[in-house]
Every structure is written in structure tokens, then in C-alpha cells.
Length: 266
Image 1: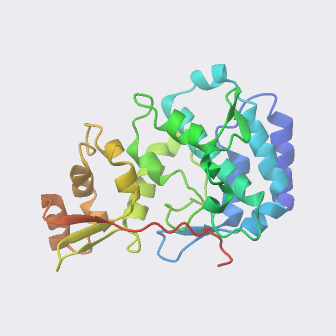
Image 2: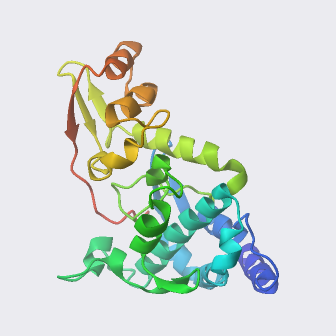
């Protein structure tokens, strides 16, 4: 707690000077309160712990909000993308904390005609924004980043989501972090798996919802099948199975999505 308070004081003292691209306050919160599973493929969040350190989170969110659009536009591509990913994840945690404990799923925060992702409850880059604004309006906007691996970095506080990393995303290591995030997610057999006997490739609904993002026509992402082929070693459990995935010798199925809160107490 003392260490986190020292980070809070540092953030407060430097917020008027320059933005911390190491995202140190957020990094320390994640390190303290994210629990990675033994196999390294998933994680859960100690929301009660983050709530005790909410002043640190609030200071970090204030630092994000203080960044102007002009500042942001002067940053490198990776610096901007790391900023947006961390912002999405931090405000998602903040949204959960507003209703924690007693929350079973982030979807419970929506209404009949709205979703929690459409709520405009924070200010970013000079505008009132929602989580959808960050993910779909900024990260996924055609021609801006065209980064399919971002789907394994933004985390919607649910068990079915990719893991929230116990560290912040930073521009200097962004490519490595995104690659690692995608491989960890594909390696989780509760969410992605190949059955060699039935020749069925069962994958997360993320690939169904965002199929077009994995068909941008570049590198490994020309189509879903090209994507799975490029990451066959992460999806399959044997060389023969990996070869079948690379060859496209399977029928594709999408698994149901678990919207339960990714709470470490459960």
C-alpha cells in the first residue's frame, strides 16, 4: 500500500509536466492485483484489492484524461496504441468498481436499450467517451492501427475475455506484448482447441464477431484460416495437429462466450 501511495504522489506531482509512457501507476496496480493462472493462459482480477487502492487508479485515470488530442497525435503509432489499450482496460476496471461487490457480469450494467460499453462516463482526448469509443472508434478505426492482435489486449472484465496482463502495455515492448497476448489466448484450451479425431477447430466467439479484422490482407492476417494457420503451433497440441490446422483440414466452430466477471474471489 505504501508503495502504491508513493506512485500516487509521483503521478500527482508529474501530471502537469509530461505523460508517463511507462504507465507506471497502472503497471503497479496490475502487478499487485492481477492473478495469472498456473498455466499462464488466463487471469483474474482482485477487484477488492484495486478498490482499496482506488485513489491510485483515480490518479492514473486523471492522467489519461489530461492528455490533449494534440499531444496524442504527436506520439508514435505504438505509443498511441499502448495508451488506448491501457485506457480501455483501466476504465473497464473503474466501471466494475462502481458496482462492486455484488456484480455477476459486466453485462448486468447495461439496460434494455443500452450496454455498459456505450456509457459515456469518462473524458479522453478532449471528449466525453465510452469504452466502445475507444475500442471501435479509435483502436479498430480502419487505417489507423489495423492491429488484429489488439483483440487480445483489450479486456472486457469477463472470463471469456483474453487475460488482463499483470503489466501495462508500453510502446517499447508493444509488439512482443501483443504477440504474447494472442499466443496465450490461443493456447487456452477452454477457449480455443483443435480436435484431431473430429477435425474440428473450436475457437472463441471473438473470431466470429471480428472476423473481418483478421482478414486485413496483410502478413498473417489475410483470412481467419490464414490466421489460424500462422498460429497453428499455439492452437494445436501436436505437430500432426498443427499441420492439419495449417492445411485448413478442419471445420470451424465458435464456442459460447462466458460473460461471468473475471473476479479472483470466484
